[in-house]
Length: 209
Image 1 (cartoon, one colour):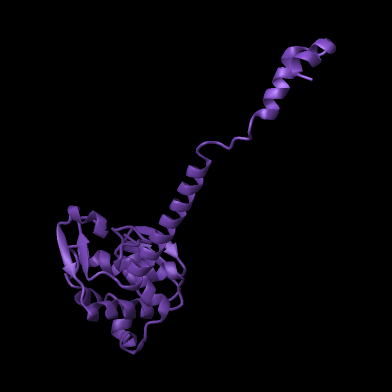
Image 2 (cartoon, rainbow, N blue to C red):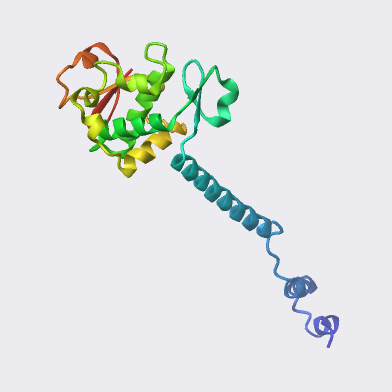
């Protein structure tokens, strides 16, 4: 029996309802046209994120051989078009950075280790301090581990090595105008505390501009 015949036989059911039901039954279930595309984009985004994480990890494992500076900050490699000065980092200086971070911040959190490396690099960029990493670290009356001999004795741990690589790669835990730090619990000379502008505290270290 056709739909038309059935309707004529039972006129109590409107044709429009039957037609609607028939159309609904015949219509295939449709997924959004862009669902597959959306899934593809999500997967691609995840892959890009993983790729970026891997690239960052590789960069921080192998610190750059050249640093790029503008007049007021350390630049990333992507920002090197703003460079006013570049600096070639020797293996000896990378080791010195690792050792000063270890000597100054062995018991500090990882973020604090990066911040100590940032301070050294901030000084390297500034005209107020020596113009090599080695000279910055060995400048008189600046880093106590140099004066007491601890710098020569320490062997950098993995966190110190990672922190230096991160700082050299452009990771910043303190601002580019931060040139000093000290532990208020251990410092015998509080001149910096009284003469410089406090910036922030990380672990036991207070940082100053």
